[in-house]
View 1 (cartoon, rainbow, N blue to C red):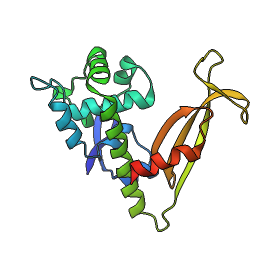
View 2 (cartoon, rainbow, N blue to C red; view 1 turned 180 degrees about the vertical axis):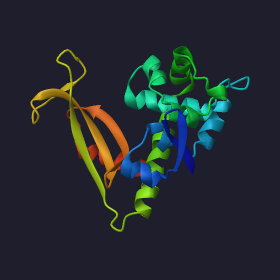
View 3 (cartoon, rainbow, N blue to C red; view 1 turned 30 degrees about the horizontal axis):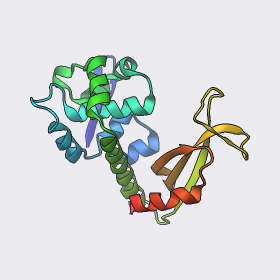
View 4 (cartoon, helix red, strand yellow; view 1 turned 180 degrees about the horizontal axis):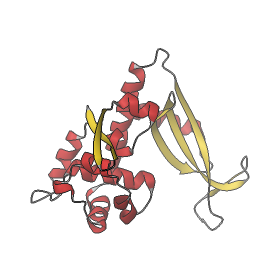
Length: 201
């Protein structure tokens, strides 16, 4: 796959970029997502529209994922898109959606079920990549404490960590996260593991 990688003195340069190149050397979230096949999810989203969507749905999907991961807010998510990434998003005439359009897409179009499907799809693609490039296939399961604000009335006190907290339970394949569940600060890993293995089966 060839994508535009940089501009020097307003001149565009092309470089062949692979998923392996991005994972090893870094790249934008849009470069990474451009390698994933979202066609089945895009078809589901298309059914929600009465008329043809104004903006390229794969581009909107990428923006929505970036919004959730980077947590920059709607305005800054759009503002943060580079000239290269605008090409990848492939909006008509390069025109980016407004922050209100992105907000509507994130809050009204993207359901929890669709987000979970996306998480599985990204994890599955990374799993396939990793398993094809690694002789020893090792999965790890662990949890990470997430300290809560002292004003958070929902967080539970964890005796071991001596603070109010939540937990992020993560299943890793090598160094790549496949699935994550967010729980209160006292949930034992062993109660979460069966659900994880059932979901990734």
